[in-house]
Length: 150
Image 1 (tube, one colour):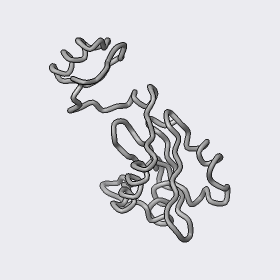
Image 2 (spheres, rainbow, N blue to C red):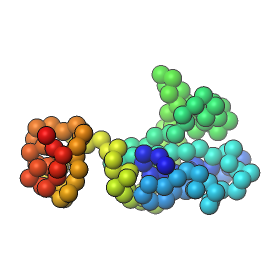
Image 3 (cartoon, rainbow, N blue to C red):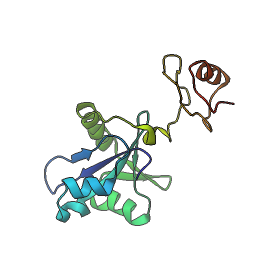
Image 4 (cartoon, rainbow, N blue to C red):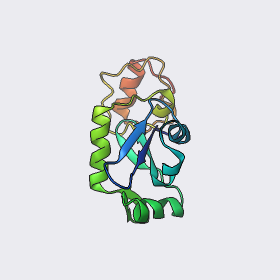
């Protein structure tokens, strides 16, 4: 399981990139087995959609990075990290607009709340232990029913 919503992209020999995703804490391997023919697995790449709106290329090792850059052409190396090329990032953003995917409690565990406005949030029973919050955010979170706020 990844830390966000799993999304798989498939780069065919010709035609647009196809994307597949499943709401909540899903698995790239399940998406591949359910939606992508085995012969296309080597033409696929994995993304993580991390709450609230971060996209991350899941290329944890040198071979994955090489494939993303050299074979699939979807990424470029910046400071030693494989980053999606801007036009590929735009494609996945457009796909997400047309196919909105919701986060669940598991994918919210890695949420970056820096700068988040919690004033309108329902935080009843929210466990914010370990969250990096400003003093104002802590005060709001406590008033909204969150626990684990120091």
